[in-house]
Length: 437
Ligand SMILES: Cc1cc2nc3c(=O)[nH]c(=O)nc-3n(C[C@H](O)[C@H](O)[C@H](O)COP(=O)(O)OP(=O)(O)OC[C@H]3O[C@@H](n4cnc5c(N)ncnc54)[C@H](O)[C@@H]3O)c2cc1C
Image (tube, rainbow, N blue to C red; front, side, top):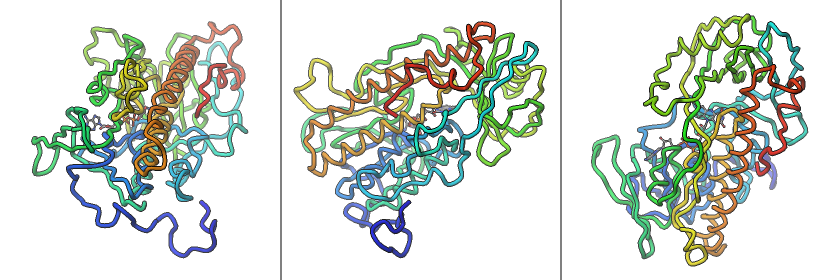
């Protein structure tokens, strides 16, 4: 943060003067907007944060929850994504502050393989790949930072909670996308309304309805893989509890261990295995007691005595990729520019083991955000928008290919390694690691 970059400024330079649509911004969602973003996850909030820097553009972001995400989900911010100026690089020197109270990843020890102990491989950047740190910050807090940034932007943006996206149609005219929304909270709960937009960004997660409404299909794994995820305070004799590492038991079963903010909590991703096709959601009923028991079995002969569970979930996901990231069919390429885009988990899903989900989703949001701002302000031709799908599809494909290799490697039993992972480099730099991060 360069407080004195352009000379001395009094006050907080993160709070920018209101301008354009930020002056007397209507509190209620208007009937017509330039950009409607669906979903306040990392992809949607980053796109909104980008667009909040364009006071000539009316952007609204709707969310079906009644309020902000309180806790949970992703936590890894990779080095290049933590670049402080990232969300506003195109417009100003101000930034959200993901470095306010994270855990900084650093330090690592070479494991000492022993036959009577689970194998541990320490994972992290070897150092020197970026001037910015690899951070652990709770996803809810990351979203709050983007919310704070938007509120302090010239367009004074804030999410519109309590609206569920139901469907859309693309027609003609100045506002060609007609979106049906359902009120999920407040006095109008249960009623629908229509909002017309010039462009729509679907950031509505893995079960995206925006994706379905533009006819995109997800291809990839038939089956999901499940992890029990828990952020806990615990007594343990496991020696590396304050180091990020992968733990692999001799009898099968693995854990990804991530120390958390504050110095006491840690997260465990406990591998619950493949989800059978006829599971019908049964895996999601796995209790915290079962997750803890499985963790104890994996780290045996060490023990884990969980004293407090700050958050837990069962995370079920497969490797899948959408066929396109916008509403232009292959046969129409070059004949028209897109009106509807999808981002983040709506386009690509993969394991949490590489810690990339939140990161690549935010990068999708970044890519489409600045492009929409520039096109709507008349600085760039509409054809710029066609580059979004082309650019992000290849990144998502690389990520999924990498994650397949990575999660297979991490699921191996120690004896299956030709060369046991005795150094972190061997676990951290597979050749097909995604580059555009
Ligand atoms: C338990 C768990 C642990 C994870 N751990 C990691 C990790 O360690 N590292 C990592 O990088 N990634 C992790 N991920 C994945 C990560 O959370 C996602 O990749 C990331 O959140 C995707 O961001 P997104 O914005 O695309 O979608 P989401 O975060 O899923 O956000 C979608 C938003 O859209 C809203 N929404 C959905 N449908 C509608 C609708 N019809 N109308 C209006 N709103 C709608 C949802 O309420 C939600 O707020 C984890 C996920 C889970 C569930």
